[in-house]
Length: 266
Image 1 (cartoon, one colour):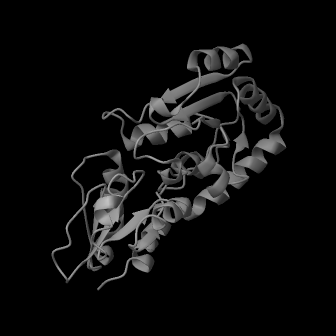
Image 2 (cartoon, helix red, strand yellow):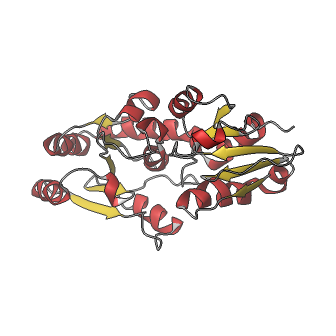
């Protein structure tokens, strides 16, 4: 198996380089080519070609013209969305979380809330959020993964430094990026450390992760949930355990098994 891309996004590192490095020689034995956010013309009958769409449906019109191409999506929601629009075979291979070594949060206080992701994905008034959190004794940290300089070590160290994960992505229109094509990666990244998540109840989370986050639609609701998690140790520990359990199937070693089990060789 090999992975290629024509666009050097972070998704190629996560879904290509990291998978192949971890999977080793056994994965190399699979006669398949995975094209990440790249359409590849299948000119050979000796290899199976899979187009990993990641979070975009931009290429499906072109892909549908070649029934020998198979498609990979991040979630069952993405699979259903794509399968309703093309005749090609569609399979699900989720993102793996970042925590390969199963590091678990060891902090003894609950006072730091964090957002890890592209800054465009935090769709609220950040200054107002920070002010309200600080007024109640909380700190707010951000790590912008949209920067080319952000490394995996930066991400791991960030999660080690926070107690509550925040996601706040409201419904919005982004050409070629329907909400069904998104993933739960930010939820499983934090959850793998035992960090509870407060999140805007966007469509994807409602479908793919019901009961795995504390829903909030306003800044005051976010602050109130932070106070609740801070004051109720048992509640925090329950969410910590729930988050770890939800994230376990998304460990890289479990995701690699998907490539053995779901990718068919010709």
